[in-house]
Length: 355
Image (cartoon, rainbow, N blue to C red; front, top):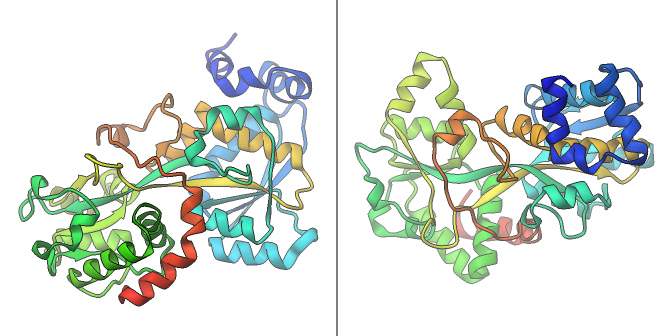
């Protein structure tokens, strides 16, 4: 037995599915070679950039013989496309980042619940929908990137502390129109309630060094350039800069550091990239099989590593860059609550002046 086959066989995904139909679908291609069975196809709409998902899908095809047809686009555009296509959609799987996007697809009737022992075993309950409409396969943390020459790590603590007077004119963050910040606000609502979360948002806005503009990478560059001392960003943006071979990015990395907030309390706010089976999937069996592969050790490793994210299962190896950040305590809030509070978060941010 080849080393590749041995490693695949050890994976819980393949151990769990070694029976019935899935024996033929998964094991025979591994024994006889890729694409032997020509087991069909699955159509994927993906909110992740093609470079971040295609290698994972190609590996799935290599193992199963199932061809993957990929359409990439922005989350909102794909959701609108699914609504317009209705029952005629070719899409079997929707992959997207942030639980708010998954939740919006679910409440719009674009996803269907599925039963899978593999998914329930591999994906922690915190990172999947209670109704089984969507499942998270990689984690990103909403962290602080700061300038060590102007801010000591001992000064940093929690999201809540960012309203303190000492941070006046020192914080940058992107617009609240971005779903990452909406989910952060939603987490504050889930923990503290709407009124307290609004007071927090108002205090945060008062401490902005500038009006929100640009994406997370722009916030990091602003800190490196001395325009602010702290940026609130998703962890993988920091990872991308660390991995970059550009001289300008290397200079940025020299001037910044990473901090995981709320480590003495509930833990750092996290979110997922995930997927669900579309409501009118024509290739439902293949779609579920793809999700099960994404939940496997190899699937999670590839899915997370390509974008410097964390696997959702603790037994999956992290990429060297992510591993170098050290362990951290993640908030165990069920992420379904972030979707439920998304509307409140948007309205709250508007009232607080977080444009």
